[in-house]
Length: 299
Image 1 (tube, one colour):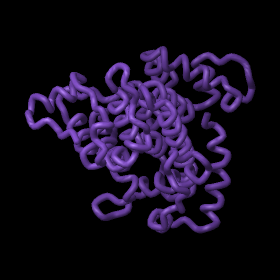
Image 2: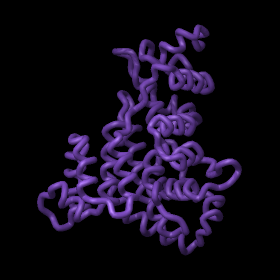
Image 3: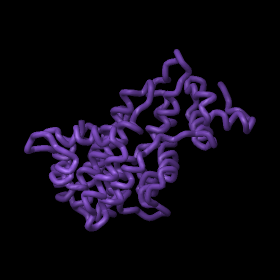
Image 4: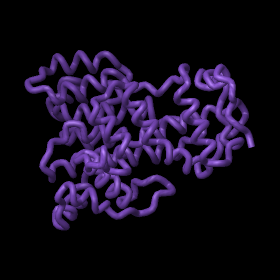
C-alpha cells in the first residue's frame, strides 16, 4: 500500500496540482484521511471559491434600512450568477404572479432575504457542488444541503433566537464533503474516479475539519465556522451551541424526508438538540409539517 511522501517539497507539490490523489492506492481509511489532510494543508491548495458578492448579500440582508441600490450594485458584480438567479426567481415556485421579472422587480416581489437565499443556492451550485467523476453524489449533496437550509429557517422560527446565519450555515454545513470530492475527482486523465462508496468513510471523518478550514478561507463570521466545524457533535467547548442544534434538527428532518446522502440511515432527531432548543413533540410535528412545504422548492 502506498505511503505519504516524506519529503516536505513533495508534500507541498501535492497541493499545487502537480500530483493527484488516486484513492485506489489508499484503501485504508486512515491513510486516505491523512492524504487528504496533506493536500488541504499544502501551501498551493486552491479551495473552491465562494463569491464575495454572496457574502456581501448576507451582510446586507441583516442590515436595517438597506436600499435596493446597494443590493443591485452587489448583484451586478457577478452577472453570470445573477442571470441564473433571475431564472430561478421567475419559476412558478417563487413568481406566483407570472411574467418576466427585472432585477428590481425580483427584489420588490421576493424581498432581500429570499433573493439572498436564491443567490446563495445558485452560487454554491455553480462554484462548490461540482466534482468530476462524482456528479451523482455531488447532486445528492447539493439537494441535502439546500433542503437542510430551508428547514433550518423553519426550525429557527420556532425557537427563541434569530436565524441571521441559519440558512448559510445549513447550506455550507457539508462543504467539506464537496471539497474532498473535488480533490478526489482530480484523477489522472483516463483514470476513473474511485467509487464514492470506497471514499465515503474517509470523507465523512474529515469533512467537519475541512469545512471549518474553508470557512476561515472565505472569511465567514465565527458563528458560521463554529457550526460547520461542529455540526455533528452539536457542542462547542462542551456546550450545546443553539444554532448548531438547529442545523442538526434540520439535517435529521431533511434526511427523513428523503434528502439524505446515499449511505445515511434514517436518523432520529438528536435528543440533545431537542432539549437544548426546548422543542416539544407538538412543535417538532409542526416543524415537520412546515418542512414538507419548504423542501418543495428544492430541485
